[in-house]
Structures are given as C-alpha cells and as structure tokens.
Length: 172
Image (tube, rainbow, N blue to C red; front, side, top):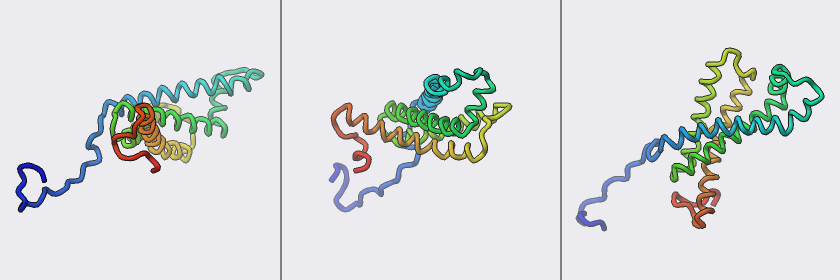
C-alpha cells in the first residue's frame, strides 16, 4: 500500500495514455531526414554498382536514366531501396528516442509519406509512377519504419547485453 492512502479509499482509476504520450518530435524529424539521405545514398550505390555496368555499352543520358527508373525493374528496386531507407530512418529515430521504439519508427514512416506527398505535389512532372505504385510505396512506409524501431529495440538490448527496458523482446 502506498503512503498517504487509507485502507478504505480505493486506488485512483487507471487512465490510458494517449497515442502521442512519450513521443519525442526531434528524433522523428531527424529520422525522416536520415530516411531521405539513406534513400538517396542507397539509390546512388545501387545505380553505380548495378545499373551503370549494364549501361556502359549505351550512351548514358538523363532520358536513359528516367527510362530505367520507370521500368519494372527500376520501380521494384526503387520500392525496395525506399523501404530500406525508411527502416534505417525509423531505427535511427528509435535509437535516439530511447523509448517507444516501434512508435517512433512508425512515425518516421508517416513523416516519409508526408514528405513524399509534398515533394510529389511540388514537382512539375511528378515521379512517373502509376498511382497504384505510389500506393504500394506509401503502404510500405509505416511498417518499414516500425520494423526499424523493432530493430533498434533489439540492437539496444544487444549492445547493452540486457533486455530492453520497455517491455519484452519482440517475438517472445
């Protein structure tokens, strides 16, 4: 029994916490920036390691690059690279936040969606992707960020050699 409570009074009711309770905005914003930078870097690495070798016979121009990224192989590679970048951003945000890792990672996914919508609406020509392709990319962003948060939670437990403080290990 806590001090100051009489044995005849019931304990105060348990109040549920809100969705945004405990969320730190700075790690989420930096996670979105890390997502963008990671996606750009991974796209450049992919291009130089895999695509540029195939295009050495052809003349490399802006048109040939746009043609590759709008092909089915380019769209699939872009989706995987963007999803991986969001997971990296979610992991970074979760590590910086130090608590509620999955929630911070998922909010990086939300920020990634909002950034994509803003950048797409600001562009004059758009991305060259069909609407269904954009919907798949948006649908993958939140789970990818949350997965980055889970990875951060597992990494934090492994680095300190003890289980994470916020709950049990994922999957157990």
